Length: 390
Image (cartoon, rainbow, N blue to C red; front, side, top):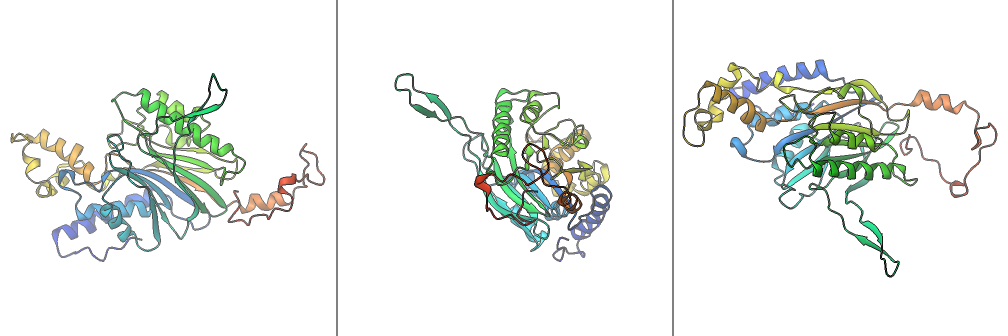
């Protein structure tokens, strides 16, 4: 559980924080499955709006507690939009406590990179870093020189924000996560540059999954893909590469307005070895904190300051304008304009493993008998259950 010793209950802000945390915890317990040390993995992705930025006055102290409380309910979560200043991320890690660890990228340079990072946060009581980590670079195009016949390599346009790949272990399972924040571009569903980024990334990860020497053949893509609708070519670009999304998530929008399918968790895994349960969803924290009601809006009027009362031109806002400022802008910079998406994965395959141990060995043609051992694997050390790509 997160650490709350620095909350001061004697202040109005401290008392409010405690009360809101209690409401949030009730909702989390109701909607998110309980963590089980050996049987399940709770995996999530969350674009936390400009995490580390200072727009709209910056985040209140209480917001970091709410963010940490939500994160603590999962075992492993991918975070997008972490800014170059890591103070916000470090503050959340401090609240989460020493059981939690993290890995993050350097910022992506350039205008389209937006000085953003991505990160993985994980509970070390359940999840272990597997040793594999890297920021992905698309391979060059191979062409034949028409005169010399030699192979030449031409660089390709890279993704605007570099994807982050890491290998993890939990229970009997090794798996590789790749998180990304795909280019938004024009505000249209089928932006060609966005489609191209998703196609290139999904196919690259699919190719890695097919490699015989891959660290793991359980590949998961997760993050902010800026997909408007499931019918768009942006979503099709994921499925064309052989990835599937849990049925429970397919009809759930993930933005705060609940009208876009920006965020996705997609799987390309070994059958029977990294299966999702029937539990998955999108968590709407605005049902408990920074609610869309006049009471909460009034409660935070002082914190919102002068900008709540008048616009940038000094013109007074009417009640509708003040409500829009609070709901659409200010509170989304306290939390986010995205909602965390999560899925439960089964990671204890003991029963299946023991059942398979009783089956007679098979030859490569499927017949029972002495198994054929490929020459390159002869004498190889069998991995234990924590090392196996089960």
